[in-house]
Length: 124
Image (cartoon, rainbow, N blue to C red; front, side):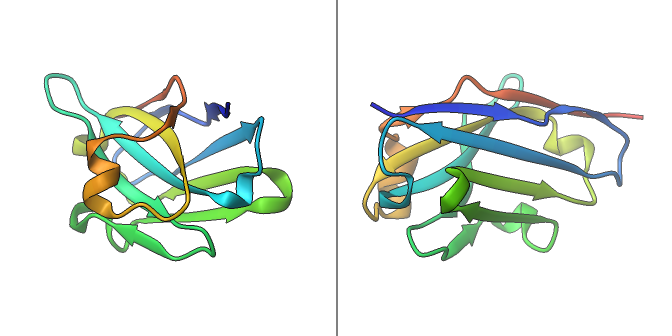
């Protein structure tokens, strides 16, 4: 079992920044691909960024150049730095994990472990 706990959400004005953190416990963190997902009100959950084993990342087009994800295996933590936030970034952000190197389509179908989410609200 892997337990994931997100933190760092909050209310920010358009153009502002937030950094989300996700701490994992229970198994060997370095053996897991991490993903950040989000779900806005009335919308389906979407994969935002993938942080594969070894640190390679994938970002959806709408956040490229604004969001950066990194992982610190020594701290069992993955981060999501969000800059130039827009109202359309408002959502509950979830951290998720799956062992190994899942593909993007596989990740979009679901992950093995999920956090409870942290709310990000971008509003003036």
